[in-house]
Image (tube, rainbow, N blue to C red; front, side, top):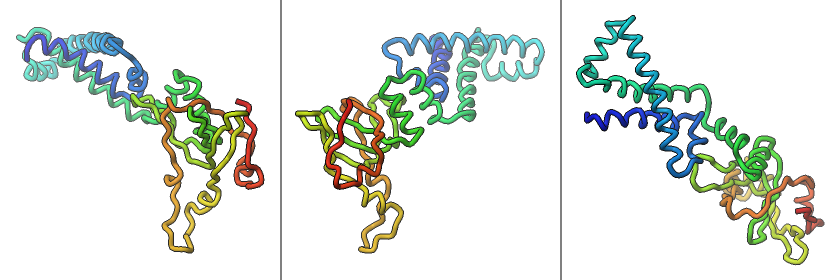
Amino acid sequence: MSNVGVTLLPILGGFLLLYLCHYTKFHVRRLQGYSLFFLSACVGFGLLVVSYALGAFTQEFLPPIFRAWEHFVPENDGYSGTFVGSFLLGVTLLLLNVTTTEDAQSRKVVEDEGNDLEYLLNDALERAKLVLVTLRNRQVYVGFVTSNVDPNSEKEYVRLLKVASGYRTEETGHVRIKTRYSSVLKGIGREQEDGVENVRPDDLNIVIPADHISAVSYFNTGIEHLFDEEVPTLSSDL
């Protein structure tokens, strides 16, 4: 391996650790420009220092292990063993992923660093609360959040289990419910007498690009009003 290639190993190890570790991946994927490169270089330098310290300790107190390591990376290659060790150390630290889950860290990033939209949607998801989502074209959906904006993705989407849909009137901004899914929701998990395939929750899911959303609020009117055909409109306070 060339000297240039060896010196890049700490940066590569730092990048893999930052980009793949559940504790850091959602933070760094929000970085732009050269920020990720410089952060990877800083982490790589830290890995290099630890690798050097481990090498010195092993040479002093565990000579058999150090000699075995020399067979893998010959001593006459300068500090190449330290550079290779820093890369392997970064990869080894990915074992930290077993101590947490990707979903848990994703939610934590939204709570710590997310905007107001992400925070509200995450809270609605955690507490199974109804939300009222208004799109830029005045289309309206009422439902339960089943998947929040993913910090791991470059494109942001929200998945909603629809309870009702409609639109906002241009004149007053009131919400007019046009379609209610009460009968469909009641059929989930039940046998259909007419031979129609059983309804699944996914059948009522809708995926909405976050940049298409104009406003989101908790829907506190009460789910029973959505299924009351005598209530055609809902006043809005947005």
